[in-house]
Image: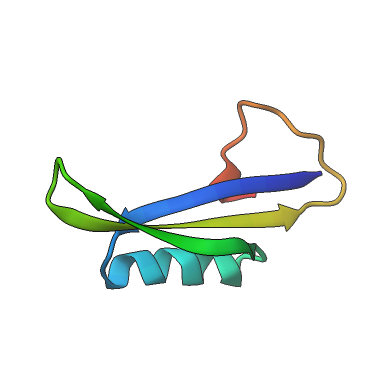
Length: 68
């Protein structure tokens, strides 16, 4: 089963830690990161897609992707 997640967060160290944690759990970067201004909060936001191949499991829409 191939999984996809899109990680988002404020442009600070916590976003880098979120991506680093995913990489250390076997996720791989997919595509380029994104960077945009959130007018509602007045902050810059980051985004990064990640993918992961998981053998021996079937996809279920109720699964928590971050726990795979």
